[in-house]
Image 1 (spheres, rainbow, N blue to C red):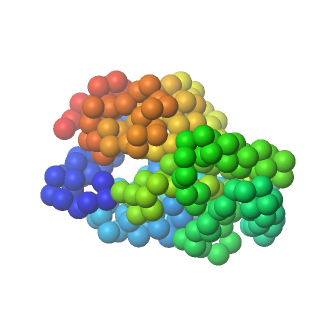
Image 2 (image 1 turned 90 degrees about the vertical axis):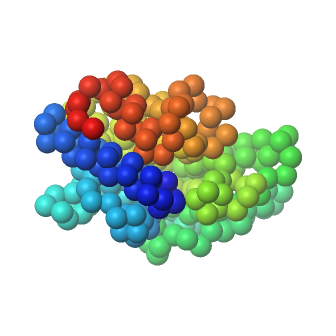
Length: 254
């Protein structure tokens, strides 16, 4: 939860304790998979007083992967190998934006990404359902023609986004939340059918579908809720805690 109410703090600490014990007793691995940049993630972790670092951290929409060892973040060399450089992605994204503008699809740049990122983010402001569907389909077609990946999802005002718009994120085609989760599973010898994933928005849906237990938290966006069959009755970290306890049986402590 973005709010820091006493109830949210208690929920976060309970989940942290649960995950730490599950990791120590059962070898459970957990990670954060987020569209935010590394700096943003670490800043939020500090703001909310998180006490337990994850085993891995996938940020910037699955373009960067770090493992945590002895309290330090280390880039995963296997994931970074073979990815195009940021200048190449930026040039392709600029070309895509020009082509889309010529075809009547206006995109507004977002300026919240750090230098050197492999994610180039824009907003598409919604107009009407028929036109939006046509325009977003064009975004996907243009990205594919340029060998670019693209993530399209309804924005979440609760996370600070504008009302009534979509995130349009151009990125390397081999990246994304689903692909990075599949990579982590392979790297650790985990069958995806035995993995859990939790999300709250449209850009989480491919990731949720790639594992055996993909769950939307109860405070998810309406767009996500309409497109995924499994939604927790609980919200925020309570959803993760109770769904894990209910199904995995990895730990019995409160």
